[in-house]
Length: 98
Image 1: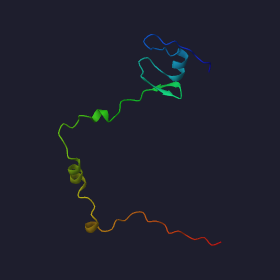
Image 2 (image 1 turned 180 degrees about the vertical axis):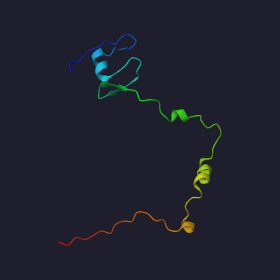
Image 3 (image 1 turned 30 degrees about the vertical axis):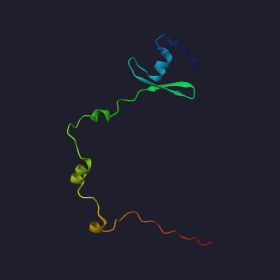
Image 4 (image 1 turned 135 degrees about the vertical axis):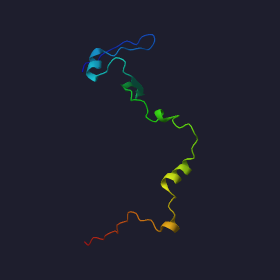
């Protein structure tokens, strides 16, 4: 693709050439993110809002997380009461005969 040019205005605004907007599917009103990478200006579509941000302030009361987890999960594992844990077993190293 041929290199395209645009001029930076007084307020730092740049018009993305129409050919690039069409080929990249950039529509009017769409948000872009900018970063500097190795001396080059890189622009990409801005990702949507962080889903966690929508949860901030949802719970109005204070919460003891440890107590909540103990209540919902039950008591923690205890070696004396629950016995030995069973987990993935390590395979014994096999010796190959030459």
